[in-house]
Each structure stands twice: as structure tokens, then as C-alpha cells.
Image 1 (tube, rainbow, N blue to C red):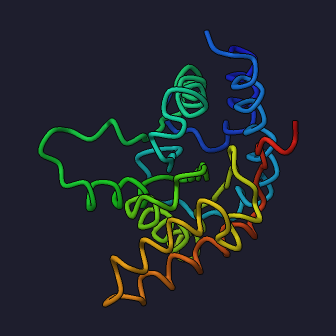
Image 2 (cartoon, one colour; image 1 turned 120 degrees about the horizontal axis):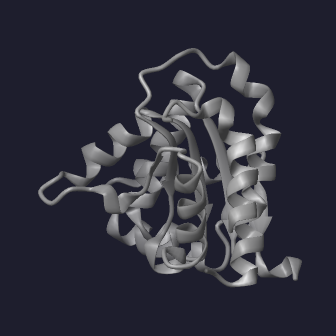
Length: 201
């Protein structure tokens, strides 16, 4: 993981304002550096914002909190890259406003799409807000497809189809939200990111 931390530090250094795992997870986390590096051309053009965090991580906890996400988070912190992850919420915080504010005050968002990402309305709300901040503030966004194919996310197939079937039933009186979430998934799959689905072997 020290190698991963060094790579992340090298790629994220322009963003920074603050001064043992499985081999598969290490390899997956290391590739984030390449995805961030692909976005380096955009760094120069980002206007100064009122940032509080370098990186915001959007993820589905039950899928990868203790694997890929925890390794990535640890590697970033070792290199003093200030990172927001949802367990930083304090008792009594309102989840919605607190998370949305954290997104707004981050310079880069990493979205870790996984099998159950779309089954969480909070994840989908985060996704929509991240993309709005990208358009409004020039925030960089790095999508990562972890144990899920890009096609399944884009076309809402497989587990994403199941998730949206349930969402359409739950939000039958607010279908505008469902349509917005689907559009956000399509938009996110068009961004430069990294695919770590099992299909890569």
C-alpha cells in the first residue's frame, strides 16, 4: 500500500492544500492514480474554491467499505490528502445536508460504482450533486467501476435493473427523481475513469 500511497500523492499533489491488504485490492486501488492522472490536464483550469477536502469518496458501504474503499482512503490519508468519507459524520448530523456540503467543499470526487450502488438513494443523491458541482465549479470527477461492468451501470442492467425496478415502485409519484438518477448514471459512465470489474480477470 505504500507504493499506492506514493502514486496517489504524485497524482493528487496539485490538489493538496493540507500539509496490510489483499494483493487484488492493492492492485485495484493503485489504478486510481492512473485515473486521476488522466484528469491532470483539467487541474490548471479549476478556479480557486472554498475547499475543505481534497477528495470526496462516494461508495456503497456494504459492497466495499472494508476492502477497496478502506485501502484507498488509508493510502490518501498517509499522503496527507484530506479525504471525506461518510464515517466522518458526527452523531446528530443530518446526513443529507452534511454530505452535500462535503461534496461542494471538495476539489475531486471519486465515485466507486459497485453492484449495490444504485440500491441506495443516498448514493444516487450524492451522484447527482457531484455532477452538478462538476458543471458549476469545475470539480474533477473520477468514476471507478468496481465489480460491475460499465455497461450495466450505463444501461441499468443486472443488479441496477433490479434496483430501479424497486425505485420506480417507491417513487411512482416522483418519477422525475428516477429519471434524474438514470440520466446521472449515463452521464457518469461517459467520464474518464477506470474499470475494475471481474471481467478484466
